[in-house]
Image 1 (cartoon, protein in one colour):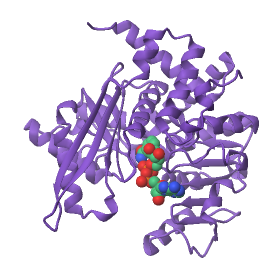
Image 2 (cartoon, protein in one colour; image 1 turned 60 degrees about the vertical axis):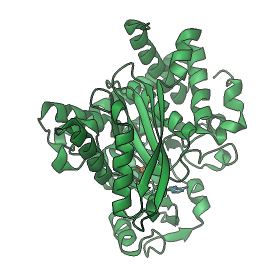
Image 3 (cartoon, protein in one colour; image 1 turned 90 degrees about the vertical axis):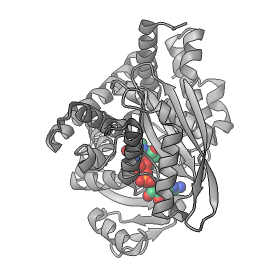
Length: 426
Ligand code: NAD
């Protein structure tokens, strides 16, 4: 592997996801020999919307929240990407997540561009009524840029199908008719797709199985550690454990639970439902929360937030395969360490693409008004994830680059080709 670009070596990108995304972009663009003009187009977001959202709280006070929607690329189709509600949302984070969506949709070759949204708020302190008002006003503020042909949001951290239903209803009230295809990740009763809640975790499992096959490993001998027990991590844990993997640890915000013989995931889910925490589980041992990522395992699935594997801790990882369920969990500097440790990385823009793939299926079903059964969804997901995994690994072998840069190169190439065919409208 050739030396990394100077941007990849900067420690600043260990804190700022946009700089991390840009460093990977620069490296892939350099290797692809993309001309300067095309690099400028692909590096910048098409549109960045910032809105201030007034909400009357339950006690009568008015609070103003700041929200963003970034549409990174519309070259291959409508912008596609989740909405995040969190106190630490920043424009640079949303920018990075939007760009990752462009590359992700191109890696799995579905006809979408990339977008992402975020609202700076703490949903844990908002009542349901306040959350609904915030969601509806945010949707109304960005409504001119949304639509099945323009931009199709989905859930992300701290947003869920209930919030998607409010977004869809707000959009539909303005359109004066029901428009289910404006968001994905909706409840089944409102045009949601079978298999969507499991899709990202299922996709992680499919690509991990493919990596095992490549490395001559078997699921029943494979120990898995998962960080994050939400939509992605919880589903990955459930499906992998049902498929025979030994899920030995779950690390979440409130602690890490460990059982070297394998955790009973449905029982842990029940325990968390009853107690509100994964800690204190009778069939596992509580270990230091910070140590979760460094427990011995074969597969590590970070499925929580960005920048958890950095130059400061990458050397402590004890896995053979890193399957990135979260977006941006590993910094460019950490990549260099993992390369030296010979860890097989399944990069985020491939590993967690199962979610957007089934979101695409949902959009297709909504537009056709014809709904598929779960088997059909899962089979088509399997086909796309396997094809995409193989395409990335083959591309890497052909060009002598690691999986991450291979995924970026494949994606950039596809998006650049679409832009070339369309031309620059003047
Ligand atoms: P979620 O809110 O359902 O779950 C996040 C989980 O991570 C929670 O259990 C939370 O307690 C935990 N967590 C948060 N900060 C943590 C920390 N510092 N250490 C340990 N645990 C922590 O969110 P999600 O939808 O599962 O998304 C997780 C990640 O996957 C995000 O990076 C998201 O962008 C990405 N992703 C999600 C989807 C999807 O379909 N939901 C698709 C692709 C990528």
